[in-house]
Length: 279
Image (cartoon, rainbow, N blue to C red; front, side, top):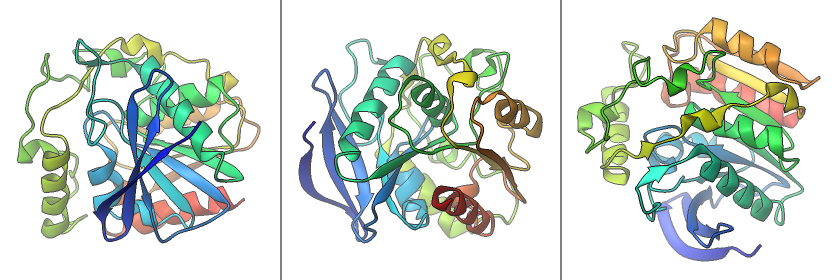
């Protein structure tokens, strides 16, 4: 599969290119232009914000010590075109991730996959159904045994249909006092609002169902100790259910759902993931 490289500067340290999906959609991918390594990691964002604010604005894309890429699901960020009904299906995301992984494997000897939150659900499904993933990082995956992520009245309840975002919405994951500076929180919120002013409507969340025993590549499960969406109990259950014989579980101190953006937890987050990918 060929990628179309676009000379689009997302910031002083990142570039964007497009990867054609199997149905012709053009998927936006950002990457650091400063880190060149034989292996690479593909970063998947969550339910609400695209890769620009999540990985680039926070600086996380440059902290893992290897070539890193962040893709936007359909309807997010720079991947503008959506399905005719405006809804995003997990199965579509899985196929799109596989297409981007296949593209990256033409450029790197190994390609790892890191999924955050809803992106973790996508990453699990990808790793269970393909051999394109060398190592898998499930970062605050919102999986649980009861499928709580698919409950419209559960912890992830949102207005249906989902509408415009506000600046307050974009800062809503920063729940721990003094864990991030006001300037950094504001920068993230403004970048998120600019990149994703309209919430994407997900549908058919039952497609996230997966037999975690089919995930056999080396795995890291990592989450914050005060994450309201990924509790110690559910993350331990996720770890136990994975079929991999090589797996780790890391809990980040003093962190909620956005460890990669918080002042001190970010160091532990990057160190733990970097060490796992180096193993």
